[in-house]
Length: 369
Ligand SMILES: NC(=O)C1=CN([C@@H]2O[C@H](COP(=O)(O)OP(=O)(O)OC[C@H]3O[C@@H](n4cnc5c(N)ncnc54)[C@H](OP(=O)(O)O)[C@@H]3O)[C@@H](O)[C@H]2O)C=CC1
Ligand SMILES: O=C1CO[C@H](CO)[C@@H](O)[C@@H]1O
Image 1: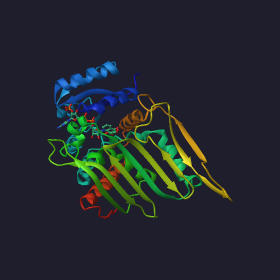
Image 2 (image 1 turned 120 degrees about the vertical axis):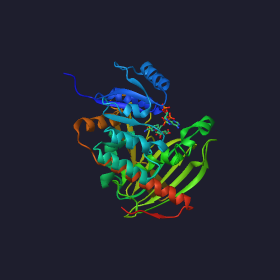
Image 3 (image 1 turned 180 degrees about the vertical axis):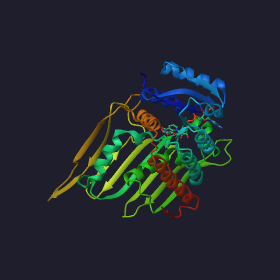
Image 4 (image 1 turned 60 degrees about the vertical axis):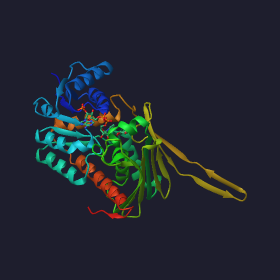
């Protein structure tokens, strides 16, 4: 007897959907059934390219138009990597068609839009989850254990996260991320979603009580009605005296820093979103000791390196594969998991408030639960 699989449809022949074609292929419990594009030629070309690179036994159908895919009754779940400006419409239509929704990040243009999207999912009894891959890495559980054991970092005081890359000219001129119609939050939506989520993860999803944000640069491609953030810093203040800062930019070369400081030590990792290539993921805990003895001043390192056996990409245990496998398991079990929409909503609340602060010149914004 063949085991039941989650039957996937994809809305949009997006670049990231090629990676996730392989994620579904490697998941063991999912199968891509159809790819929809605004143009039939593009969906055929997308399938051809994927079949050349990572072939699957049953060639998925190429569908013209997103609604045509939602109208099919052989699809359980849809993956929506459409630009953020279009997501509300298609997430709601997908939920109304009874399809479970894997929604790319940033989930929405605003908290109120995301609430409407989540309401539609709730009303139609379908799962919502965002596409943050690192949430499904084994490294996250290892980080949780280390942070929660006070012998390691002591009491938390500060979280600092950076995620950036230096965009080439072609990106600045053409990419969806530089259009206010398509991705109005610019680098904050594209990269800040991850840095904010990491701060929330470290704080066990406690919302900060105040936030502020400052835009350091903006730009829009020629057809963009408005500029979008190109470089941004945010500050979050939590109850109990913990603060967090994040930095996102399309103007500084690749960096993916997480630095958590406590009264006894600090934790660092440098590849929290896109793990460095290999079969191990890691992070380090530093508890330096400064010894002064007369004329001798010695700073001792005292570093513990933690490693987790997990491939960085394109393997059955890679984080992006776990994302799709975990989602398919939810669909197949019929048990909706409320954690995922809540994590997305909290991330959106913090992101929106930081952007609102930046529009007010860095004003402090209070958040209420
Ligand atoms: N979770 C993760 O790790 C990642 C997430 N992402 C997120 O996924 C989303 C897509 O990113 P990416 O794959 O780079 O984007 P692409 O530009 O490659 O794809 C976007 C797709 O949206 C569809 N689309 C519909 N309307 C428009 C329009 N007006 N203009 C442009 N495209 C349109 C197109 O599909 P068609 O023409 O076939 O209809 C297009 O292929 C982003 O929001 C990004 O933040 C991206 C990379 C990694
Ligand atoms: O989500 C994503 C993963 O990281 C990329 C940067 O390297 C982003 O641009 C992309 O949207």
